[in-house]
Length: 563
Image (cartoon, rainbow, N blue to C red):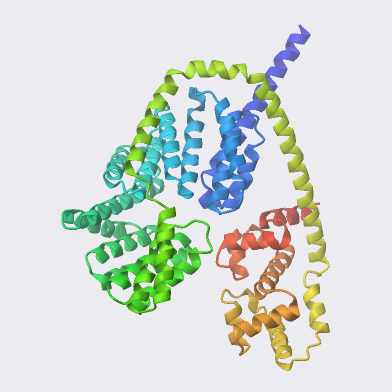
């Protein structure tokens, strides 16, 4: 009897702990979905905690969401290994009702990751799979979200009629289910879909300007209505950009320039790199069409210079080369004409356009496959059970390896933090710079003058200003950027950028150590304090210079204060 009581108590305790753990895992998942609000760094911390679960469905979610976050911040990672892990776990998960919600989310995240990577075929495949599980689960909100995603992909692929239909259906569903959403969330979703609808009207007009004039009117009405109804900067910028494109095709070039420049100003304030590059191209095209060739050339060269540093070649970059060859032809620069013409042809051959038929067949194939999967679901579950023992052993091995890796990683981070705190307490962060200041022996009077003035600016903390740059300092010191850069490199033994970043990071390390109030600031607020425009670039530089993230450093400071 006593054994039965102990067994009963054990089962109750185990069930309670298991339920609590699962609630924690769900909390971490919910945090991932608001990554734009809490920041990628914070979202990554929560996602990493999901790996503590022993469930296949949670492991699949963790790998999928982490891969997405790494893609968003353009951080290098082992793509092949992540996909291997994701697919491995997905094969183990039975397609049963309790898994429908997570499976729909996982495939939707996979689709969004493919979208970010411009892998549109894979994106559609994953979105369709996500929608399959959403509909099985009667999840109307998820169904609407995925339909909007599919419409977005078809918009990217210029499948305008299909995209129009998907968007109109999504809008209709959204309005019919308005009661399911909070007011703010509904407005964002509605504005997003409404904006996409205007874009589709615009593309329909552009596809046949003479035949589809009515779509231009619909697009103009749509975008102006959006501008009057929203205060969100990203939607305003989007509306201005698309109004500019409409006016360009209607040959109202001055009006198009006006809209484009309004959009560019907003995107620069938001620091949206891709949109800034696209507008740089659009403005270049608009100048070319209005025969302002010098301005057009400046835009296309600026775009090319930036894009050549990226691994992804997009359609704007390809056709910028064609425009440059045409402009140089007008200027009678034959060598440049040949160079850019050949470059355009080579890039075009390497990046052929995805055919609509291929996507349509893929859509059909995937729908058929989904039906077959449903028919064979029970037999699939039975086959999976045969490999259960092997899967459990492999899972245990993976967990042990992962835990050992995390322990080693945690110890490394702890060591770095201890060294960093010691340096901050001993005021030895700038020891190298101060030694140089006291021991400079510079025979060149001009270089000595530059170094002394530079150190004066350092003492006055000019490096905290947002405008602090090589150009800014060179102007302050009455010299040119090349000479200043060479002088800093020669006597400081580092580039100007390294010198500047070192001052900023060392300053914030000291301030965080001494001022507890700052530890509650957001990453963006800390970035603003030391002159960084972007919280992401600040966090990246902080990690490069210290080996730890701002969050880890602040956590360590708080822990030290409590001990």
